[in-house]
Length: 294
Image (cartoon, rainbow, N blue to C red; front, side, top):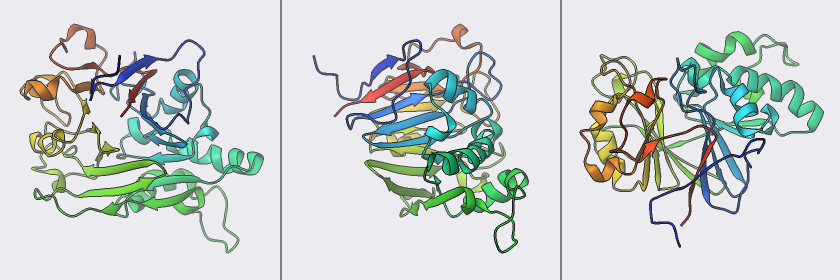
């Protein structure tokens, strides 16, 4: 029997099984973790996208290096392309180690190409100056005596800005191998921001014209409306206490039923089992492959 349109095939990795970074050309999303920044039961909410011979690691937080090894059966030098949604530690805390491992172990010892960083021109300088430079700029000197920069660790691939869809929300596009990626600004930090343009830079992702991943965001009905017509499946940030800088489950319950039935909740706290998600597609789970045929 064929899979109903919009319903992913879901499979949990077997014990000792590694997640493959190439497949038969079907879009797959694999959650290294599904937990919030403070979860002790789960790794943090980072994931891998695979389609054909193309893979992208989206975020690598503090638990990311161990999640790659323990949940995916992968090493740091297996990663070829990485995208960072924003500079909170649960999304970027492992990136310095990824960069160092690939520069000093992967490239000279394995002949591995330099990591590709998929980013925007607005975010790249902030990622370097406010997050990575303290640990990466001073490891060595270039031949001309200057400090290292972001481009010494990564080949930079920039998203192109998209035309304004009408709500003023900045969005961007990039073709990566067989993948089509659309990046959009989210309304995350500070909680006083009135829309995403007032917020510190944070992004969500629309993948291959069919899968919406909210990234970290407050409840933003306009954002969901702008993508739910195209999205077959949605993964949404969800916390249990309302207020602050993440959408809460009670707010997401206000959405129309047809949206909730396509929506998996992610980035949640350790008390998730005491909360009812029956209105939704379910909880996103770590060590789990979501496959989107067709």
